[in-house]
Amino acid sequence: MKNLYEVKVAKFGGSSLADAAQMKKCADIIKAEPSRRFVVPSAPGKRFREDVKVTDLLINCFALSAAGGDWLPVFEEVEARYNGMISGLGLELDLSSEFATIKQKLAEGAPRDYVASRGEYLNGRILAAYIGYEFIDAADVIFFDNEGRFDATKTNNFLSDLLAGKENAVIPGFYGSTPDGGIKTFSRGGSDITGAIVARAVMADMYENWTDVSGFMMCDPRIVENPRPIKIVTYRELRELSYMGATVLHEESIFPVKVAGIPINIRNTNRPSDIGTLIVNSTEGFRTDEIITGIAGKKGFSVIRIEKDMMNSETGVAMRVLKVFADIGLSFEHLPSGIDTMCVVINSADIKGREREILGAISKAISPDNLELEGSLALIAVVGRGMAGMPGTASRVFTALAREGINVSMIDQGSSELNIIIGVHEDSFETAIRCIYSEFNHE
Ligand code: ADP
Ligand code: ASP
Ligand code: MG
Image (cartoon, rainbow, N blue to C red):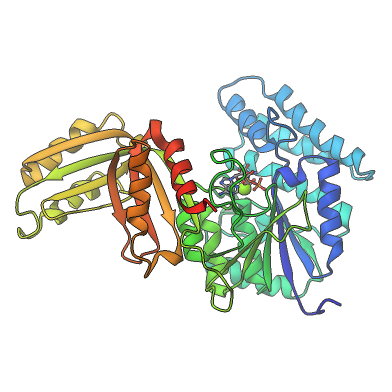
């Protein structure tokens, strides 16, 4: 028997809710445990590889409408997806007045976030009707401030009071509202954030995140075939992995549950009996002996390499370099430095077309002995709490890369001994991940 007081928040991703058959699986999962009282759905995702997510269809409607084009045929695809779900589930629900409102707003030039958010809104309406839970519009409970920043305090106060009096509810993911009543969305994949916010508000015992994989794999399954699943990972490790592109969970979704110490369980809607990945504050009490927890990476970086003799002893050099970036409003990703060198790793997209301006400003600020910019860099994070106190992990990584003839153009080892970040040319990205993975996983 389940403990009556146990509360779980279950967030279902786009592929888990892509059509009526998938939605039935979600409903079965919800009904299997009475503790699954609060449910956060995404918009319908892809049903097959070439399919288009409803959110993308809606963003396309907005783009067409903004450009004065004909968005109606695309919106009719959206309507058809929802109507297909309603009939596939045998529901009485009629969403035609909702569709009419959205079309009316599109015709009047509705903003992007409003249009994009309708995917979750409509899916929430259907799921709530199907499982018989109360529907709560996220616009009424998830708050952003006038600058468009998520207002965690206001939201948590309001939502925890409201949900304390509810037996159950469906709250659509991805969006909320601003003080003027407008709709604001999180960044793409943001339903994960809503799930975490709701979990914190009800002080859930568990935040379940249902998706299309049986948890976090040690690396992206699109790069390494059948990577080992991660059974348990800490919030901090996961934050490093998500930030570096392991996209199972939105990187910002860790914060709300971390402050409340709520564990996250990544589960597979298509294989509900798999245990998935458990994300916790500390692995104390769990038996784990892996050195490396996971490997993740992203392309699209550039590194500015600055050399200046005696850089370390001359005061204020680093500060003047960083001031150049602050003055032009650019943030940097990493800042590995040596005795006479300093590297600034930045997003290539952020400096596009401004390379000469930036290098010129650095030259003027510190008169370096050597200054160069290297583009087409991919960053790879090798993450693992097991690395602390295990000397030799970095050298194993570099030996493995050297064996494949991969040149490492930047290294940054965090002082927490939780991760090693390396920069390689984008062309070697996939090979580098594969060879690091096999270095730590040949049985
Ligand atoms: P959802 O729509 O349920 O939110 P996402 O597409 O956002 O799901 O996230 C799940 C996907 O993340 C998987 O299908 C997989 O392709 C991808 N992915 C990237 N890195 C990893 C990893 N390390 N482990 C598992 N899946 C990963
Ligand atoms: N539907 C939104 C997206 O596609 C949010 C989400 O799925 O989490 O980005
Ligand atoms: Mg997602």
